[in-house]
Length: 390
Image (cartoon, rainbow, N blue to C red; front, top):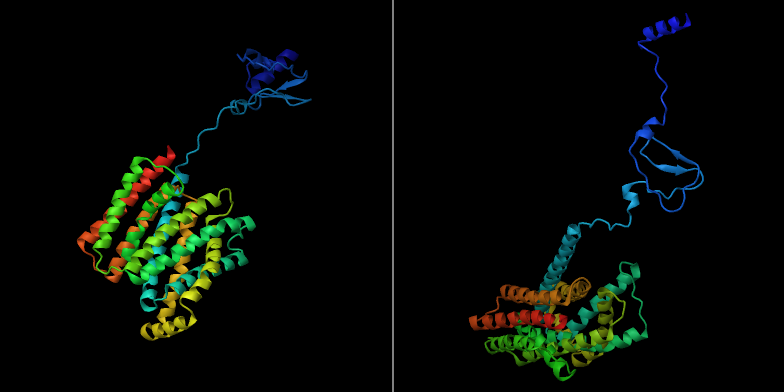
């Protein structure tokens, strides 16, 4: 009777027969699973859990068993990261550096020539350029815009010959631009690689491959052709550009030899160089020109040009520092070859823009000489870099 009642109840619920009791571990017994354990024995009390993905846990300590394929193979090298974006950002940064460098240099040369045409005192204008840059950097350090460099006596001692050469080169270039066209000064200054090779060969004893010497032929030939066909040739202007080339070659040599191992950024390095050059140049500027000449010339320039002359002087001083600062900052980001190519392109932009703005008369032969000299400078940068990389 009890059996009949159970059958009746099962029928009402919907089962034709009572459900058999299942072994909760029967499916595990049928699972075709093979586990391999490390050599250390597992703790005795181990619990298998099926409600989540299969894992082993211990009540005493963590099991050394691998929990997943990802965690089990951490020794595999990570997947390579796509650095396309970082490369694009780097190229964009270099492009911004170059564009800023060229633009600032063009603006400086334009205002510098305007000032020198109205106020022909290159020693004072050179001093004002260094003074403006020094003041800007002192303010930047004081307010925390730029981190103050950590320098010592040894740093300034090694910087001194660099500053002397920089001062001579800066003044000589300014004297040149006060006597001749901006384009002519930069054509002659494109011959700086020839001075670099000659000084390194005969004073330092360095040797160069034949390709480097051959690259100097178009540089020297182009500069000579341009000088011979210059309509407004002036010997003082020509010699100023040549002395500037020689001085900047020695500046680079002293800088490479003396500044190895110095942890100073390009921006701060040029700031310190400007300050030391200012101290060197100031007494010579007073001796060569003097306050009386400056005052008389200033009054005449104001009467001829008007108040905007003050803006010209301020602009040429500020932009001189900015373009040099950007060029030194770019050295921290690019290779010497890229910098040399950028410097060549900078000269092209300055020459072309100055000819257009000042309407400088140029003969076809003169333009051909400039093109040959600049092409030679580009070839020199290529072969010189290849020679040093071998």
